[in-house]
Amino acid sequence: MSKQRDDESLGYYQRLEAAVEGLLFLKGILRPEDLDQQMKAMDERDYTRGARMVARAWVDAAYRDRLLANGSAAAEELGFPAGPLRLMVVASTPRLHNVIVCTLCSCYPRALLGIPPAWYKSAEYRSRVVREPRKVLLEFGTSIPPEVEIRVHDSTAELRYMVLPLRPAGTDGLDEGALAKLVTRDSLIGVGLPLLPAAT
Amino acid sequence: MSTMDGRAHPDMGGLPAGRCSIEEHEYERWEKRIDALLMTLWLKAGAFTVDELRRNIEELGQKAYDGMTYYERWMHAITECLLQRGLITVDELSRALEGTGTPYRPAERPKFAAGDRVSVRSAAPLGHVRTPWYCRGHSGVVTESCGSFRNPEELAFARTGEPKLPLYRVRFRSCELWPGYDGSDADTVDIEIYENWLEAVP
Image (cartoon, rainbow over all chains, first blue to last red; front, side):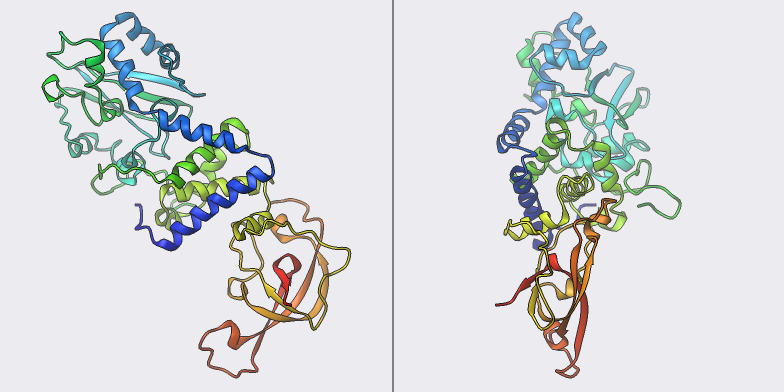
C-alpha cells in the first residue's frame, strides 16, 4: 500500500511539517522544548519495556495476576509510563494464542512500546490477520498447531493490548534478566513466539 | 471517503491483500517529528482529538490514501485538524510554507488599482483556496478592482470570513502562463484573485 516515495511528495510533507511546526511555535500553541521532549521520550520507549514486564510475570505469580488485572498499573509499577489509554495484557496459554491488530488504523501500545513497526500499519497485515491469522503468522515464521485457539484482538477503540506469551520450555534455570532477553517485540504482538534459550 | 458500498477505505479488516512484508525500517527524523507533533498537540496542547485526525485520514479517499506514506497521511490530517479548529489559517500556513512569515492584513483601502502590475504568490497550502494553480508564480495586470468580499479560505471552515478581502480581476498573457502556447501572443486569461494572493511587481 505504500507507494514509492518520489522526491516531490517527500519534499512537500517534509516542508509542511517544518512550516506547521514553526507556525505553532510562533503562535505559542506549542513550545519547541515540548516537541523535543516528546521526541526523546519516544526514542526511549521500545519493546524491551514490555519484555521486562513479561519476564517479571514469568517469575512472579503475584505480578502476573496484577499484570492481567491492570496492565497500565503493572507497567507503572516497573517505572514505565503506560499513557492515557487502558493497557490490557492478554495471556497466551498452551491452548490459546493471542494476536494484536488495529484493522481501522494503527492503534498500538505506543506509550509503552514506542512507534509500531511498519508492517503493523500495512494494509496487508490489517486486512488479513483477522481473517486468516494462521497464514499471516506463517509468513512471520510462526506456526500455531490447529488444536490451539487463535484469538485476534482488534484495537478499535479505547483499549491497547499487549500479549503475555507463554514461557518457553527449558528456561527453568534462567533469571529474570535472561528471560527478558528471550522476549521479542513480535512475541508481544503475537506474530512471533519468545526465543528459545539455545537461540540467545 | 468510501467505496461504492459505503465501506470506508481504511476499514479493511478481512479484505484480500498480499503477503505481509516483515521488513523493518527506521523512520526518518522528519517522520518522527510528525509523530511527536501529533502526540504533543493531542496530549499536551489538547488542540484536537485523535478521532478528528482519523476522520481526516479517512476523508482522503482511497486513491490519495494509497498514494501517500503513513506519516504523509498524518501530516496532512494534523494540518487539516489545525485549520478546522481555527488554530492556524490557510493564509498563515501558506506564508509559513513560503518562509516569509509576515501575515496578511487587509488595509483600509484596496492596495491595487487598474493598471497595476502584480504577481501571484506561489504558495501551496492545504485547505480551500480560490487561486488556480496555473497562475501561481506568474505576473499580470489588474484590470478591475471588484470590491471586498468575505474570505473564502475562512468561510470554507464555517468561520465568518471577516475581515473582507479586496478582490481584483487580473489579466495574464497566455503565452506567459503556458509554455509552448500555440495561439497569438495577444491572447490573455482574466482571473479573479483575492488581495492576499497578490504582490506588487516593482
